[in-house]
Length: 326
Figure 1 (cartoon, rainbow, N blue to C red):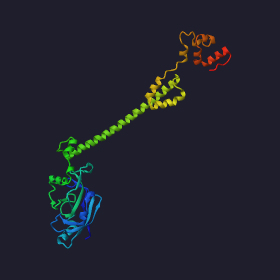
Figure 2: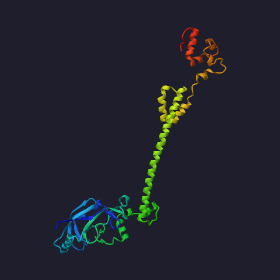
Figure 3: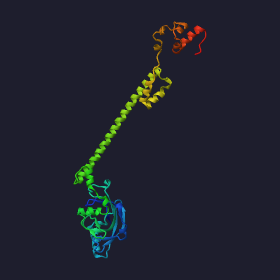
Figure 4: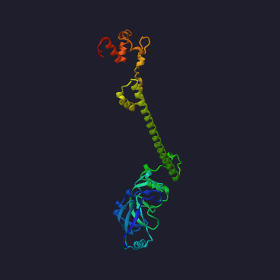
């Protein structure tokens, strides 16, 4: 028959609760001696070899070549050819590195993710599937059979990396759970944290939008008030109309500071205030009717010059016959 391709390994969670990353597999030792065993039994002679050993996505694939000169191998080949046996399985050395990273965990995974390991052999197996027919060998090449003993399995995975051993008590303490909390309880607690973080993020965005809207409204109100204050300052003589835009720009940069500065500028007294001084003997109503000499006697000429320069010129010319030099 033609060569059959088997899946020797994938990255799914095995029945022992951990998984092994294909990208971390060292195939070099295996490729040097790609023996095909039956049910991981290395006390018997190989029944064939593996060719075209390769990685495809998350799988390790290989083509089976049976030793047709061996009656036992030929019988296994016949059963494979007639679809009585479909399974193959990796035999690996103990894990070299592992990770407790949460983002590498998959549903149903209860033990770390093995990130670095080496392939020892691959077998045709009569029972199981590649993801739960995994076999480990110790460094003396003895097969570690009882992987269903969880304590033995944990020791095996952690033995090469004691500093990285999962400390579930730390996790349950952070999540405020009992040390004996189940996987469902831990996942539920983590999902609750994620949901709460999502809620807080949404509330943060809503609050930020509300603050932005409030600041926008406040800025607009200040802009309108700045226009009113600027125009009032120009009307009462505290600020030159030519500098209106500059003053509005100052308000835009520092509203409160500019408002305080403008309030500190004294208002210029209006004509009525200045000309209505008590006890002067001269009021606004009769300045036009007073002569130069009368205004001089009342001490109002300088005041008249400052406040009503045109009337001052008229009185000067009337008295001296020439225009005054202002």
